[in-house]
Length: 289
Image (cartoon, rainbow, N blue to C red; front, side, top):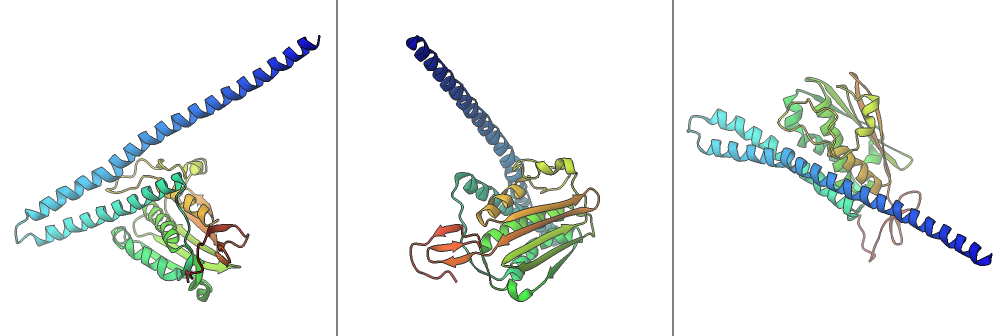
């Protein structure tokens, strides 16, 4: 009888192990399928967002080289297109490389003192051609400006965040529309918001926003519309800063993206947010600010 009981227990244990193994195999298979899907999407991304603009740049450059001396106006027009395509390529490549570092777990925050308003204005200036093309008015509003001059965070990450949110706002805005960028610090938390008054986002599509390869509007016709990778990158880099991203949107009335980032606090072994989580350990006592 004891042998029968022992055999029954052994059979039950084996069944449980088999079930666990089956589950692990299914999970592994799912990961492999996702990996293949990501590879396929990435190749499509490279083709649409990198190779096509690069081909356009080569063609336009060759055309300018063959222009006659009295065709300066045409050269200037083509040069502007080349600049627009090149800026877009640089922007997209930075997103792609950051996404790759995030995926590999190699991205890290490097907090220093940041003058927030000049950072925001520099990003806006970088998108000056796109803003002018749609005749947009971009307004920067700030509260407690003195607190924005020495906020401790990673400026490169903040630039990525603002650039992607501004890029999306430009694309979503109607010609001669308005974009409002606000910045303020409250209780050691930096709040940056970017608001447009354009197409808006349907509530049922909001969950697709952070799919790194998803475009919510496939009908937009532009020489450089973007791939949808931007918001996924924003969410990823905000995680490095223990920050959050909120969205308020209504179709036909526009969207408001609000970023909240806690200030990095100096500790004996590195920098931490106000909840005590370390960004990284420092090997020496050198000052970063």
